[in-house]
Length: 53
Image (cartoon, rainbow, N blue to C red; front, side, top):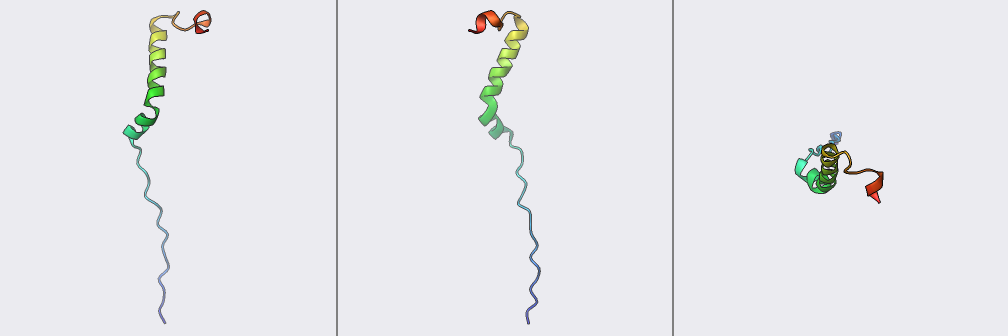
């Protein structure tokens, strides 16, 4: 009789955080928000209720 060894469940390898993939996917929107923040700090009237629409 063959004694079967119990199968050990191995967890799948953890995916590492890949900065370049993240920036490729979300970099444009972060850049837009960063530019809006920079220009708003430099000029208080950059975005206000009068010039949004």
